[in-house]
Figure 1: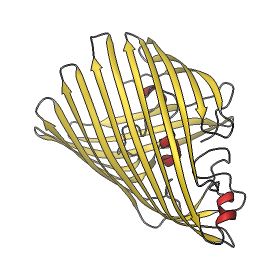
Figure 2 (figure 1 turned 90 degrees about the vertical axis):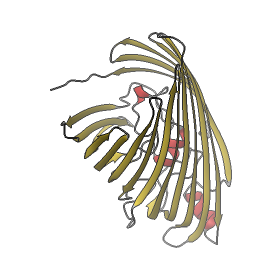
Figure 3 (figure 1 turned 180 degrees about the vertical axis):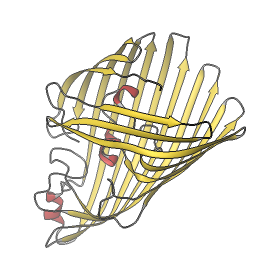
Amino acid sequence: MHASEEGLSLNDATLGFVWANESGFFTNTELGAHEHSSDVETEIEQAFFGYHWTHTSGHIKLEAGKMKGAFSLQNGQHPNERAFTEPTLSALTALEGTYSNIGLRAQFMNWHGAQGLSTYGIEIWDGENYPGSDHSDQPAFDLFARYQHTVERLQATVGIWGLFTDVKRRRDNIPDDHVHSSGTVRTPTLFTGNETLYGLESIIKWQQSSELSYQLEISALQRHSDGELSDATRVSSLDASMRGGNINVSIQYQKHNLSIGYEELSTDNGLSGPGAPILGEQAGLQHADHTSSRASLSYSYSIQEGLMLRVEYIDDQTTQNAQDFARLALYWGDQYAL
């Protein structure tokens, strides 16, 4: 994650194509464009197919291809779908914002009367995307479960997930000025070992009336890295952990939405061995432990269906030079059926 840049930029542009038939087969393709340091990058973010089987007691959904992980409620959300433009600090650090990979997914959704829905899933990935590496020869996988319950005006969703991956010769390229696990790599500094991530998420919404609603979002993530850090001449053992959490409170009234959020991220980097001091500096792990935070305030106005204006103020304490900044964003989206 980098410090925010001044000026006008394209944060996120997406073009999606969805096809489905009455037999339950479907395909989903999503093209995305993002701007980084004045350069616009385009890529195929998703391209997968699947089958959706429906029964009175629940659903079974099978999917294969390049997909955004479904294990987290936040993963894969576009900026207009969340309270703030940026993903959470935990997601930026542990998943580089969004986890997307080539793999297989199976989900089972079970109804509990008219008020409850439970979802259980497993995803198996080729393991090449962060936090894995393109040298990984073992698949990554995740398990997740969530439950949604609705009672009159109250709707609550809670989810838990775990992601497990083996890493082989992953090169670190995270900037020096960020507080978490690693920094600009002056010489090739590689990590080989295991990465384990666990997440807990909850969304509670109270619909006061047809025009007024309140929402509370809470999430926590823990990451553990166990393995070796090395360069051409040195090796050291790495036992590092990261813990992050955030809380958002939102009020929606007619076309207006006001949200306030607070996030905290802490790291504990344990390096041992004769090469530890130099490798730690090269990889940005020289600080044994550190805690950072970010507070955000957001106001959004829905101009019309598919068109939204957002103003944000962020107190960012995640870099060595803490900064306060404001952001003005315009979101547009529409759907067409053929």
